[in-house]
Length: 479
Image (cartoon, rainbow, N blue to C red; front, side, top):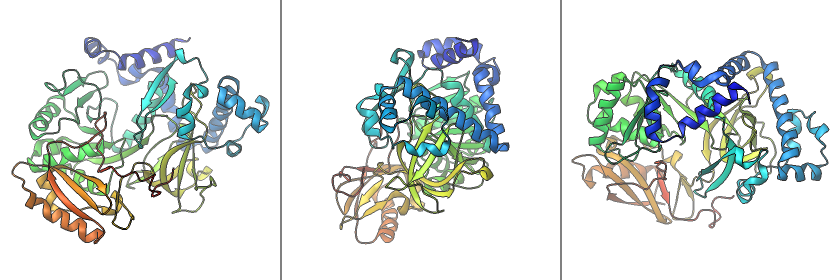
């Protein structure tokens, strides 16, 4: 193994080491410039990404070479693809001369197939890979395996995307996401010096703790916010409500991840941090696709061609080619090779803006990415689906709420659970409900309930709709 690979694996391992060890090594590692800290692989991928924007021929050649390597390796080492290649009549020699367009000869890989036997898709011994688990948008657990040396490549794409809003590797981020924190109930934060991350628990978004977060952000000079939109919106509402002008002035950028960024959240965050630029990224635990918003184009994403080959297909698996059409996102991962994901159905939908071509550097451009199994829907009294996107609420009642969530167990009725701001009473929320009712009509009625906490995932993500109805069983959402 070369020195570069050894350092890449060491950095990835460091991230997963116990807190006490990271804290002990942190001051020394923090002295290293980011280019040295992330290593040669990181630097090489940063160069490749820059080149891919200026040289479409290079981008296509790189995709083709990586695809051939992936398919040949999978057919040789992954049991599922060894059988599939034989069934399709594809020899290793044929796979080694594949073009990107030939990829359609492979069937779509479903989450259910991967979940049933993740070891069937591994191209290396499992002892040399990390086992990864994710709940995904459907809540059903999924297990798969990834390369241990993935961290430098992932950082290259992430930092390139964040650079669109002025972020540089030396800047400090205040991060609201579900990372493990020791003694979280007494100190729900941690400062990671090498990565320049002020990690803040999304489970402790009370006014008292958020006041402490503001102090910590000032102490560490955190100029960027990074995290789940649900958590960022709660913090933004607090900054407005508590009139934290210093914090608002300090923030130069906001990076939304992991959840869909709704328009009302975007407006709230922009109102709270008026000096900040805002961007959102699209990434998957399976590492088959990565995208980020185009500058100045809210909710429009360019998917990185060096990260993977991304397709948009209709329900029958045919290619989407007309702008405005909605299709399923398929990803063939080129970044890593420990597990082969070929034409993997991500479970997400998007509207086509531009198909990949030489003119746009073979970047798929889409808008409105959302999970088709996320169940971010209410069900009306006549069985109709009402999406959170369509609700798109704008209300002065926001300042009265720390956070809110709809919970539904019966079609046509929902409970609006609200964590109230100080002094809030149910009557303060009624204008909010009336505005929603005017938009939806008579198909939904709402009950207001003030609560101390909302349902969230183990990582701290909070859905807007805690949907207890089985939309798949009812035939409202297809698999």
